[in-house]
Amino acid sequence: MDLIQALILAIVQGLTEFLPVSSSGHLVLPAALLGWKDQGLAFDVAVHFGSLLAVVVYFRRDILSLFTAWCTSLAKREASDDSRLAWWVVVGTLPAIVLGFLFDDFIEAHLRTAWVLGTTTLVFGLLLAFAQRFAADKSCRDLTLMMVLIIGFAQALALIPGTSRSGITITAAAFLGLSLFEASRFSFLLSIPVISGAALLKSLDLFGAEAAIDWMVLVSAMALSGITAFLCIGWFMRWVERIGLVPFALYRVVLAMAIFATAYWQV
Image (cartoon, rainbow, N blue to C red):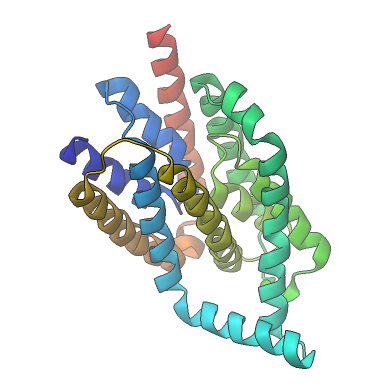
């Protein structure tokens, strides 16, 4: 595993995992344009754990409050805003788990192409810009079961490469009237069980692999991905309501054109 390539891809992963710009689109371009080889399963596990640590550390106070309230709701049957939000995170995660189990093989076999990647990057990027018009002042306290299920099924669409998990969940939440800050907050909280599950599954696959593991590269990639993702989350949460979603949508249009051009050039 090439150290420089791994570190560059770790930074790319950290920058794009939580921004609504499609991390898969950014990871496929260096490989296509520069002829870089796939860094392998161990690398995927490392950078996913880095991203997971970043979001857990950033939202550590929220997580502690939600978990405490959730446990209280189970033990004493006392509901609160925090306990309801904790349950909404659980409910919002279920569609991605179910649909991922049912369609993962099909997606892996038929939808991991540059043309699909470019199309989803473009279409969902335009939808992201359109959703900003509907963002209002609702908060996570205003979420209902139907709203959470809509956001949850939107998150499941991110199984299709190029959709962007954060992008599609923020889009759905904005369409439902949440403020951009609250839509982003709920999106990032939803990411924790999803990224945890993905990292766990990849880790289990890794136990059956026989390839040698370069631990120095993996630890470096995980740390760099985590630090970059943490800084990126902080910046996005501070600025999303000031700059809106349109700049990210325009960036996705440019990225989609680059993906299409790369796919056409390789034909």
